Image (tube, rainbow, N blue to C red; front, side, top):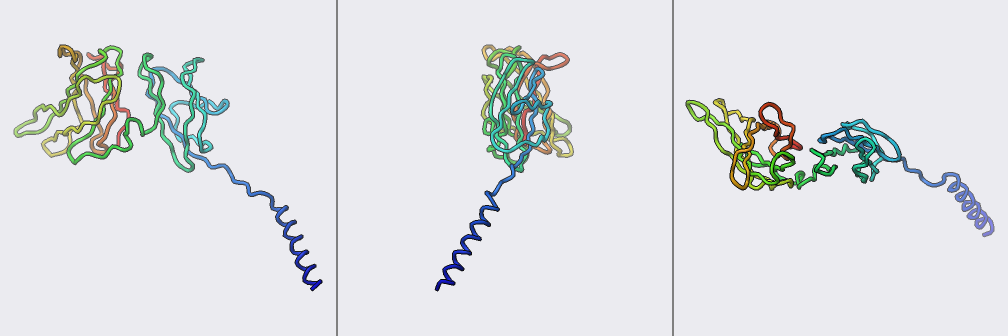
Length: 240
C-alpha cells in the first residue's frame, strides 16, 4: 500500500515538472495579403500601422491578419484614418476612390453597393450601376446608353438602357442588352449620351468599352478626365 502511494506521488511530481517545462502553447501570427486599387485624382500616401509607408497602387502586400490601422494622406493632410480587415491566408482587395476634391476619400472592398451579392444576368445582357462624380455636370443628369447590333444587311444603333436623374450615389443595377456583330460575337462598345435632367439639353456624349466577354456586372462612374471633345469619361470601378 505504501509503495503504491509513493509511486502515485512520484508520477504526479514528474507530471508537474513536465508541464512546467513545456510552458504555454505559443501561436504564430497568421498573415493575409492586402491589395488596393487607386481611383483618386491626386497622389495619396498610405501608412499602415505605426509608420509602414506603402507604395500606391498596392499589390499583394503580406500583413498580419485582423483589423489593421491605415492612414491616408494628401501630402501632409490626413484624409482618412481607419481600420481595414485582413483575413488570414487570403488576398483582400480594397479600392481607394476620390474622383475630385468635392468628394471625401473612400476606401471599400467589393461589398460596395452590394456588388459582391449581385447575381449575374442572363446570357446576352449585362448589369450596370452608375454614379455621377463629375464637377462639370449638374448634380443630376439623365444618361441614355446605346450600342450597335447587326441586323442584315448592316449594323444599326439601338438604345439599351437609361439612368434618369443620376446623382453622386450609385444607382440600382439595371440589365442592358448587348449588341451582336455579324458573327454573333458580343459588342463591347457603348455610348453614353448625357442630358440635363431639367430641360433634356444634350451636355456630353462619351464612349464606354466593357469587358463583356469576361464579365457581366459593373460599377461605373462619370468623372472629368475625358479627352478630345468631351471633358467627361465613364470609368469602370469594378466588374465580375
